[in-house]
Image (cartoon, rainbow, N blue to C red):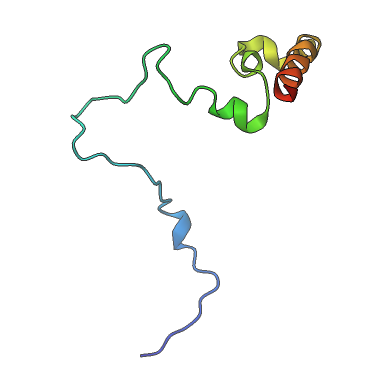
Length: 84
């Protein structure tokens, strides 16, 4: 057999792969979800990035520059809690 290097093989863009987690025993139409107050991963993003919960779940007001004034006391509170 002869092998030829083709550095411009462009077949990959035609059918982009999408990885999904398939669960065999899940009924058709079932949507995985958490009821309010039961999501055990709600603080995962907050803990990883060191930001207050109010900033991550605050909604549209958190995207404006004026929110930085509200954020300062929250960050101070977090720093003080970590120091203890």
